[in-house]
Amino acid sequence: MAKLVLIRHGQSEWNLENKFTGWHDVNLSEQGVQEAKTAGKKLKEAGILFDQAYTSVLTRAIKTLHYALEEADQLWIPETKTWRLNERHYGALQGLNKAETAEKYGDEQVHIWRRSYDTLPPLLDPSDPESAAQDRRYADLDPRIVPGGENLKVTLERVIPFWEDEVAPKLLDGKNVIIAAHGNSLRALTKYIENISDADIMDVEMATGEPVVYTFDDKLKVTDKTKLGK
Ligand SMILES: O=C(O)[C@@H](CO)OP(=O)(O)O
Image (cartoon, helix red, strand yellow):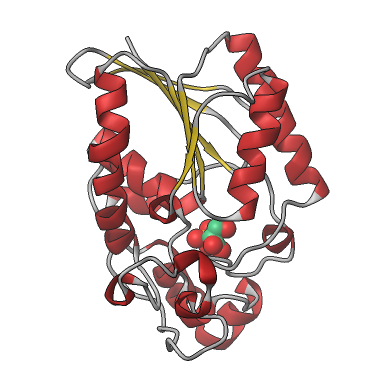
């Protein structure tokens, strides 16, 4: 009976400032560091022993994983970083304040940009200094798949190959896995794992720093889902 823990990074500096973040690389806030450490204590109390960790290539998720694993006395476990777990790319919205954007474009438009399954945000041009095309960490990606902006559908499409190639084989082999990632990349994974409809996923939210523990049977069916609180 393998276990999978999903954990959204602790509060980031841009969560605190209420800015669209996406692939922009920001640090954890002080509160975010505490949330990550508390998550690690909860994992220790729950007695989950991990075989493999995965995270994105963004600082807030990597640091959350490390703070949590350190508190759980498991900082040594094998770890893989992949862009496929990055937050959904927020395109040209990245860096804008969410409340100011709602004042300018209306609450409804901002809600659609944030939570609709298949509406893309305004795209970022590859020549923009903020573009991932200008960032060394994505240099080995086919430029055709470096996004200028993503919706949840596109995010799910790039998360699934990672799930199929990496996570599912580990779980089928009875290994326990922890994934530290982001609100929307984890909403995409949650949609896939729990077979949530395109409409219902709009209402699913991930709390910062709260571990969500899934237990799977040997056919990869979910037999239990428990949130450990924050
Ligand atoms: O800004 C972002 O990248 C995400 C997560 O913080 O925001 P939202 O919840 O609006 O999708």
